[in-house]
Length: 444
Image (cartoon, rainbow, N blue to C red; front, side, top):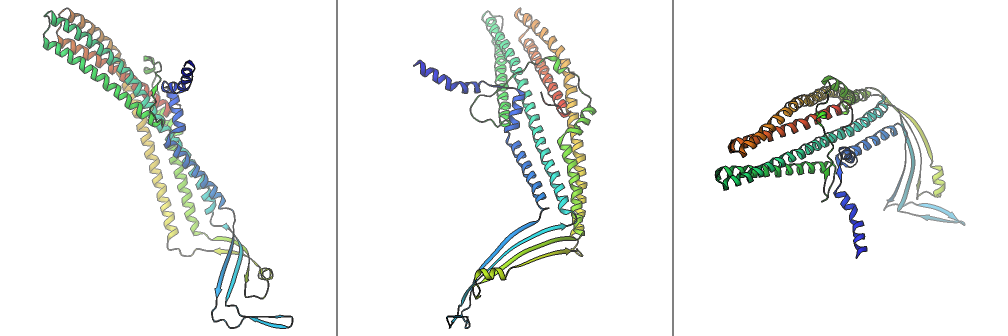
């Protein structure tokens, strides 16, 4: 029996370890970078773009193809046939059906087409770089979402502790109220208010825990974690000094973001691609030169020669140089050039729009960091003041000097001050992390 218990313990240990694992922010980001489905799809698009580059390079090479055609014919009213002489005898054979075979080997090489093929290679390379930048954009977006969810969970975890402390205080007040009712120092109506306050605090704790579970579920989905295993995050030590750290200058962050963010570089690549599209379209005005060559032969069953002789005597080889000069193409080339120019202007507007959006995003984080840091400083003093006030209220309530309304009001003010302090603290820390991230650094 002891051996069975030991064996089961060994088998269940990995499951228990998995269930008890607490994910750090770095572990969440690293795991998502490898397993997030959206990110994996972006990487597949990058691989597809790489294949397009190889295909464009391959188009610079000559093409070579082999062909054959085998056919059977039938002439029902055929009267003449093949006459052969064998040992002095004349033999005439009329064959109404016959068999043809042809064989060829052909090559073609585009010598010049207005540099369209070479520009296509350059365009494919730019598209490959754009696909790589798209992967980086997806990765950045996922990291931001993970950081936001992680901080929300940390904030709510501490908020639950504050709510639990408030609930414990409400229970003690309720117990004290019951004692005062029993000795006739408090009415049952006042006790009912204390009981209602305790029930409200219980609801707030349950609601906060439910909100934590919801954020954890969203975080699991980003990490592509499935299954009933418990999921929890590590709670790093956080100090008030982290929320009071220096806020970087807005324009410094913006200038660094312009130089490092993939969405900006992607828009710049789009403009370069548009320039190449213009060059490719203009190639329609230029002549094209193609070099061709081939070998071929044929056989026919109606011939008196053997298959081998026919194959040899019917063999021919050819080589040629073709020149195509566009004269009138129904304005298709001019239309293509103009549309490529219009597309470039559109990409320029996209770049300006992304630069504006980037500035708005960074300015939003900067304002949040500045505002919440100021709120945090004010909340620190408010919490201390409200705590002292509530402690005094409790003592006065115990002595019968304060009524139930004053006690509950003081408790609500203290709880609100504590929640404000926590919220401003974690929102400041999150905004500082985002400003650091947009400056080109890793989320920590």
